[in-house]
Length: 601
Image (cartoon, rainbow, N blue to C red; front, side, top):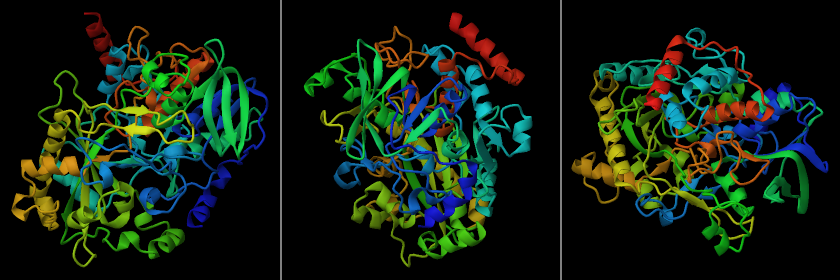
């Protein structure tokens, strides 16, 4: 009920037109109303001659409207997946399986995520281009990032790296005393405080988020709702796509289960999968598009033998807590108090008015970062309280481990946590089918920390983070590393290199950035699933447009890059260039000239 009240403030954005009856055929069928699908639905229906059906497995438009509702409110916008047991990680989780939230409903993960607006590093996208993704360098993609955003920070817009009139509203997160402390600690350690989505990324920043008028702003609000009044767009919720129908190596339509009835809907031009890095490969596999050996074991006829579901990447994460004596952070009991609901409803203030991860962040390089590409390999994200009970149900952690790590005496402590994310893991996992039954959940295996280098870099990121504790500004607020540790560990052994390696293998968490399972690449690359036009190899009239097409995971959250991918894909599908008039900073053009010269050597 609380969420429904909050969502009403956004209803003026557009009229929700949701259909229960499908037409026989549409020009384009888009599967998934998340970050990418909503962009596509909006852009493709700008052409009044094209008919579009947008299919979503989740429900309607009462999303988790408050910025901090990602972990705290009981919502029905999560697939509630769980990984398979991890061999070298997640040792403190029940059965060594990690809960793996994925958004469902209009807005997708944008309805439950942490809102952080980070785009990635220019070296990320230049590497995509160097790997055979022609047309996907930073110079090619920055215009689509600019096109998509309406940034409220005027100084950022003046820099030439940001837009001010796009559909996605972006604003600075609150500059609280805790954020100021974090940024000052960065300065003490020699880092710059900067716009991490601008010219440079290495350093500390008070983050930005997809928020408007203190409310969550997903692609449902920015793209879909304004388009829903168009007569050439139909949107269907609670519609589970079971497979892509193929005929003579061409996508002819989709098979959809809705309210207990099975439908077949034809696509005159294309089927576009935008269901995310878990669901898009699952649908392809159920359709006979994937590794031959896997499909034949499940008695699924093979349509195209390509490596769907391989190359799975995410950002593994580990969390450290700090107790504070002199800081106005949220206390443990405050983050679960019923009073916060009324405080937010009445004043748009309080704990619910900002993300759990308060927004301040830092991108840093360890001694293991590659010298040829100057992107960060570690991200720190500041949390505005101790971990408390808000994450307990989301991690699947054993009770005895949770109590040992996070159950503070008295239950009313001031503190903060800092999450350390590994940005460029070498370990890659898989998405596979449990059976040929579309109702069975997929087998999600991120293979966290399977490569020993990943644990080594993550531990180094934690050791570097500990330097914050020794800064004058952290000492001024009475910051102390939590004295609590894994069960059976003596206090004097905490935070040693050996202990930190045990911690990352026990408390291995997901950064919620599933990606790369339908890898984009050159046709000559045997690891490619889609070509640089995002067309599925071996099947005509079928594309994938979401985070799964990323060849390598970027140095950022995946929401903004996914929106960018969908903006570019819309132009590819329509055969237009909608960003030709966007002027880029001279430095971006010069860097692209240097990249092209290197690639020809």
